[in-house]
Image (cartoon, rainbow, N blue to C red; front, side, top):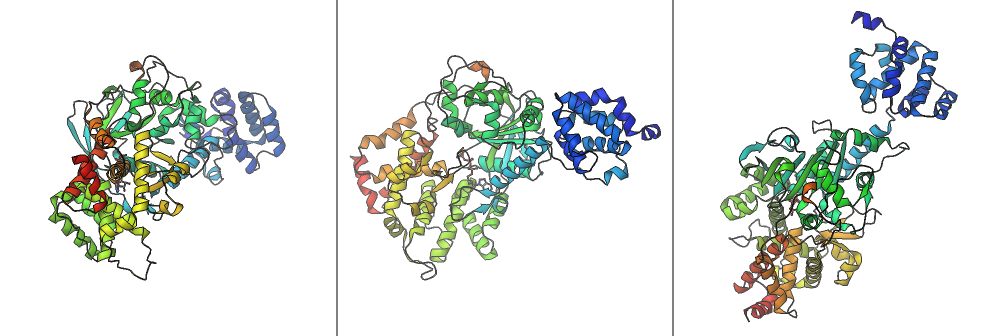
Length: 603
Ligand SMILES: Nc1ncnc2c1ncn2[C@@H]1O[C@H](COP(=O)(O)OP(=O)(O)OP(=O)(O)O)[C@@H](O)[C@H]1O
């Protein structure tokens, strides 16, 4: 060690000149810092920039710093050491020569102006910003993820579906625990509707953005799978566009360094793909044994398949979520996590986050304890959120936390949610009549016009296979601007390349199914066949799908049948809600405006 310390930086640069020339890939950051610290002047930088080829530019820089003396050489090496992301190829060499920066050089400032590091920062910043709110709340109220996120039960399974225990927190999702197939790269997260798959991904992304994920992942690219259904059959894009256009673009990167870096070091990238069930149908139709290269343009679905199989960006990490029962071949699955919802302890924590006042919190817990059925429903985070929201509504309206029914069904829960939203249409100015005495059926009657319009939109969407609606579709159903604020719909802006906020989706897909069922019940003009169609659709056997893996794909590259409802789960939900709504009517529990429909079905 003593000997190494004696060796001058000037000597190191001379001795390792060719190694440096071959391994320094990016000169921008070096030039910026040498200029800022006064070791090079503007003319020197120009000389370097006018030199042809990257290797000659590096040679020129080395020549210049050597002329400027020992201190300049020392600072040059210090830049390579400090900006380790950009000079990753030089890190082993620095270790080899046992490099330790001297105190004098450590006092000097190095600013990381490297395009790759800048891009990583930008990604972290954007993902942090995009993930800090829970999106599924009405436009009026934005809830911070941190204020409401509660861990859920995450059970690990192997390929024979034997339990391998539980994960303690999302931080462990990318770890080695539960890996049953080390050759595969996709972490598969599955669970029923509303179990919190999207929120888990959001939490993961948020942790990464805050550097709390304990990983050396430098790039995170997030996608909602349904985005892949928005392309035409003939659309082709490059991998570069898929990454940057749908996440964020690198700034000032004339040499395409960021993309080249990702292609060279795919293990530094993490992909999250949410809602694989939403594109199953299209994958079966996509029968092409095509492997695409990073440079080639291809249909986005083909790029997705290749990424998931590890044929493209081999070594990158992938987290894929899908509803329970979505088939994915186990050979691409590295580990499998099944979301089981809130345990009783999680439920208490979640209740605490919702109801800050101890008294309210206790009252809610008493209700939950009293009804195993209700607490069972509340183990699903989405339903729990609706129940808690309803509690809050009941408290504001009637000073009570008691749900009206003793037996609570999913239909009750969604009716309550609708009531909560519709009560916002109340004409009373806030503050004048705080405790409204309006009963449920009055709220529904008063809001019927808007409610029916939302129901129509949901039904039309289901018929056409739409989850996303534009302004025109919304208006044509009779919805006004102010209706959008009630909470049934939320804006979708993430995958609108033009930045236009004019598209919307229902707060949750299950809410769309509920409203579609309601539409059928409300629509006393429609033929009975449209009602019964739902029951027949659901009873047909479900198709089995192929896996996203090149070897299963053969034939043409055409992508057809872009129907996110094809998996039938939404139909099954609509079916369930139809039954629920009819039961309500049969029991005489509901307003008369849907009685006609029952007669129709009975008939
Ligand atoms: N861990 C959690 N902590 C707090 N709230 C949660 C959590 N998970 C889910 N939720 C609530 O449940 C709602 C639905 O969750 P999410 O959209 O993640 O379900 P999902 O499993 O992706 O459903 P789907 O399969 O229908 O897409 C969220 O908007 C949020 O309100």
